[in-house]
Length: 202
Image 1 (cartoon, rainbow, N blue to C red):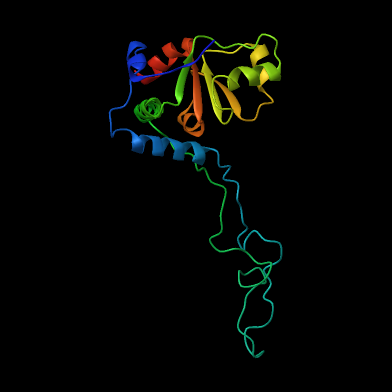
Image 2 (cartoon, helix red, strand yellow):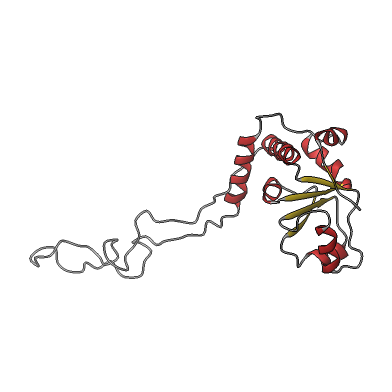
């Protein structure tokens, strides 16, 4: 099993559509921004003067005390009072069109090919399910730092061997996203994933 650099000609032969030069950068930005926004919980919450604990009794009379006039102790000016214009639970998620997603994937694949960081393997499997075997196999094909392996599917033994390796990630071709591809220093692409990627970029 030996990896070879995936070229634009290989992509054309596999019917994978790549973005033209200068196109798709904004799509990549929009999609990554959406991924990060969608991970936000949006659970930040503050209480208004109507929600904080306490009654609405006037703290002292309006006139004659020499102090400033005040209402109840829940006013925002007091410690323990309500918060003015504070955050409330909200949905930060952003929607991205299918065309934008497709264009972003085309752009990232084209960039990976241009950089020479996308490699293709005829097959990939760790039959004994051992981490040592996984590390030695992947290290012989790529620098063991931020490696992304993409295949149509992985068997249970391979997942078992890779689950404790922090610098490597296994992703199926139908679920791999632009952010994962950008994060990796080397992308190892198994040949059985080419058909799925061709469908996603068509």
